[in-house]
Image (cartoon, rainbow, N blue to C red; front, side, top):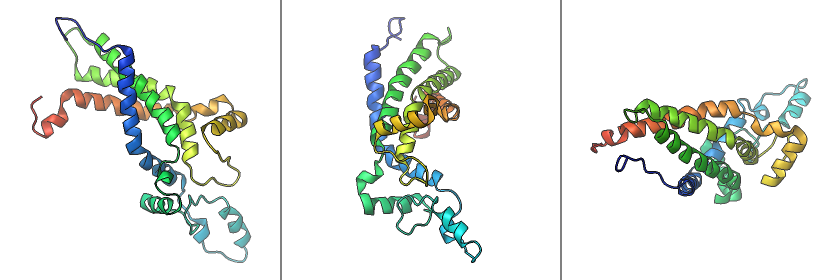
Length: 228
């Protein structure tokens, strides 16, 4: 507030600031995002190491062709993110950990461009007469996060598919963003780009709403002894 009036940055500057924040975040978090996806897709049973009998050899061998090895030379399922990271670094170098970087940027930078200006608008324009409150920051953060996550869900689908290091038999392999978009649309239709949209909104909305509420309350400053 200044002179009794609210002051806001121009929308273009808010979007630039948000996009810059999203860019920095992507550079730091992309490797762990990629490793997380490999572990979530790996499954819980290593068919290649299952005991085989004469009557089951053929069946297990056929099933083993569908096991995701994610680049591990042993052909066994990875047990940890460290194991996957070590194998990727040996075989593909640091660039391997940034597989899907372009798609991640195409998801998170637009998300930040949408989220931060929208949150600022909701917080400033619809705050209670008596002034902002923690609950209002929570609500504004949840709404902005929900809308932003829905808007970029198509790129989240593309990013996830690109970051799978080794596809199971019968699954499409993609050479890049454009190839993934074309094959997904041709094989599955437009709604394929919104798979997982509702669960993603359910995760992102409270995540950013709580973060904004904690920031409003100055919890971090209180914990390290700074005056709020």
